Amino acid sequence: MNLADLNKVALAMVTPGKGILAADESSGTIKKRFDAIRVESTEQSRRDYREMLFRSTEAMSQYISGVILYDETIWQDAADGTPLIKLIEQSGAIPGIKVDEGTQALPGCPGELVTVGLDRLAERLKKYYERGARFAKWRAVIDIGQGTGIPSMTAIHVNAHALARYAALCQAAQIVPIVEPEVLMDGDHDIDRCYEVTERVLNETFQELRLQRVALEGMILKPNMAIAGKKSAKQASAQEVAEKTIRLLKACVPAAVPGIAFLSGGQSDADATAHLSAMNRIGNLPWNLTFSYGRALQAAPQKAWSGKAENVAAGQRAFTHRARMNSLASKGEWKADLEQKAA
Image (cartoon, rainbow, N blue to C red; front, top):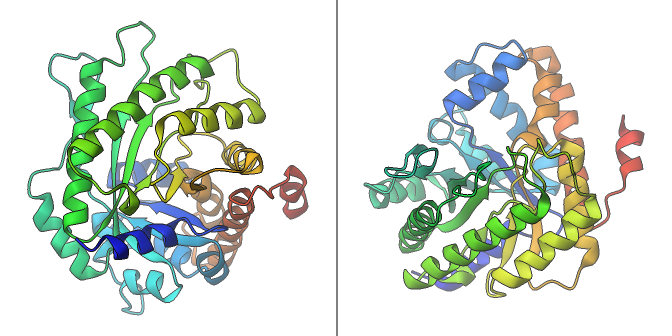
């Protein structure tokens, strides 16, 4: 492992003013997104859609530092025969790859999940590196149940252990791991319950990373924000989300980590941007804070494109706008009236 090179890639991924495009939706997830815009999900339609994003010159060169790809996409070529991974490299962004293989029910823990995919991961990482991937992503999913039993410490521990094993394998393959322990915002819990669970999850994750000798300088953390559940009657303000998330990160995340790239986790486009900007306005942080958004970057361009070749330019404009808004947020410079002006 060359830690200096890993650290260089990690720092490039969280360059101020840039963030990571999560374009790694599984075939099942992208089918749901395409169903919503009445587009049939085929290998070609998925390729055309992602090619539209990767050819958005302004967005890719100015606001996007890296792109997380799905296994299908990393091997695909654009319509003119150029490998999609080359389009990303040509824009100056870094190609990455999602390597987990989804979730399975966790034995003995009803209603809880564990992420799988460690078997033969070392061999897969070698192939992805040869193809051009320089970072990877693995997502652990932690639910907050309505009762007191979920999440169990069993679920928190096994997922943290798998994240750390994945991260160690990545670094051995000279690939920067994005470590993504996601506490879901699906429930009716308030922000303080989210804070408490996320604190336990982050502490356990960093304990496992240390035990498995992961070099913190050569990784990126992709956490959820401290945020109320979608069904909670008590929603927190952007300022409260920012203050509590910063307090949480300062309590749990070592300063050696080069950067934190938040997931959007089902927030609206504007909320994900507003929360990130409010955090960066607080400032004086040991790490760069940026975005690693999927739906919050892509919902608008998907709708504008709607599977039609004549809408490619409109889709690219929508993508560029969302990327620019989040770029401003990563510097604490986003304002709500910028959204209205664009509209």
